[in-house]
Length: 188
Image (tube, rainbow, N blue to C red; front, side, top):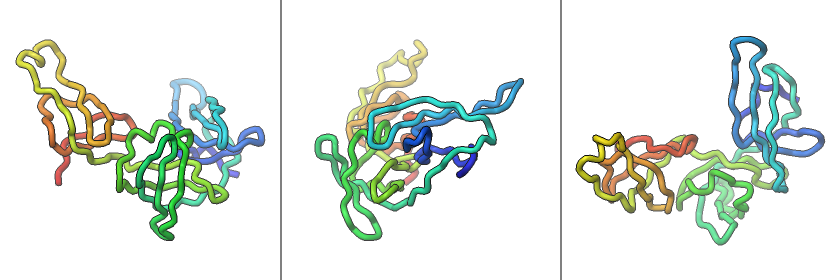
């Protein structure tokens, strides 16, 4: 058993006898009334997803998971291969489990995998990941006067994001994995 302080992305909870992974959550503190957590849950081993609200301090049936350091290797269709950095064993994870985190993966990326009964149920990405800009159209004179100060760029893993107009091909940038937004130039 646990309470709402245990809610975080990747946490596993039991609801109505089924196991769910928290895919996202937000804390809401209205001016009047009790604060609450709005959670998006995804069923483990199924496609079923749902939204649920927990009052702040409410008890919930949290399930213990083990966190393992893993490194992303490659993908083949809808399967993504990770290597356990302690045992060097390879584990395949379906795209359904990765959900919105899949587009951020790139070879050699270190992640934390949440394991339940020897199965990966969720991964935790670093907050910011470094990418190389593969394609960035040149800025056109007058772009900034129209209020259009961003452009779509493509990164080395195929991910497309909005970035400032001064970003060029070959630059190393950071991407915030929680928001999917440009996070600045890499300092290295």
